[in-house]
Image 1 (cartoon, rainbow, N blue to C red):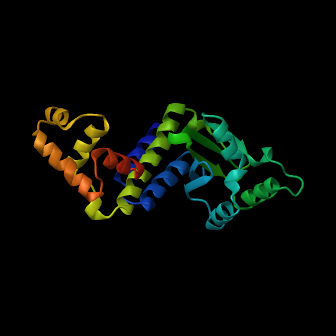
Image 2 (tube, helix red, strand yellow):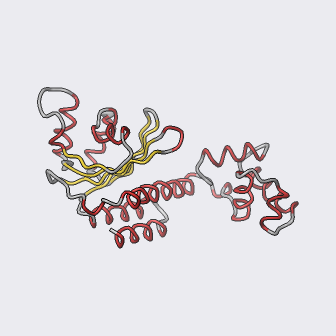
Image 3 (cartoon, rainbow, N blue to C red):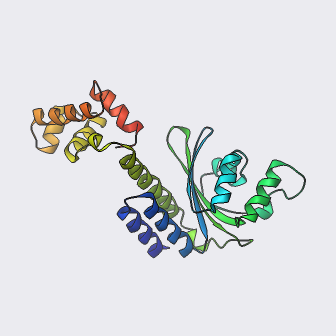
Length: 234
């Protein structure tokens, strides 16, 4: 897995849009013996997904709110380690919603796989699923839990950075110096502390913080910190 993992890290780091990240994760999934992948983040009832599943299945899944009953999502929320799954373990009788979910998943080539769940911030859950149309997936290349966790975090933060870059107007992007001074502010450092740590003058630190505040219409540094954290810019 080491070579495949390094390749994913390198490709994700070089990516400047979601399409490039999708290709990187898709290549990783295929190198591990899977056909497709799905990155899912849940926070309460809200679901965000980034995947290579067939478009018809994506539409059915989201429109039917299947994240509520998806056995993989349910199990991922319950445990925090890598696990394998197969549709053979899901109900295949009756007319229940779960039965329909199973039939439609199999119909679209989602039969077995492995899922890597990670605890996110503020009660959110992140998970990466690699899926196969085979009845039982080979998960031998994903036995290293530490590296599996790193894969999920790499995807999560790269998507967050690219999403922020795409969603924020250019005039509101922080300059490197503004970001550096703001990072120290987030860590509780005063302008004087930051000046000593960075080797620049205190009034220059304050200038960068004031410039950053104006870009986001923040009245105070504390408000600025809240805004950039909420938007995932830092």
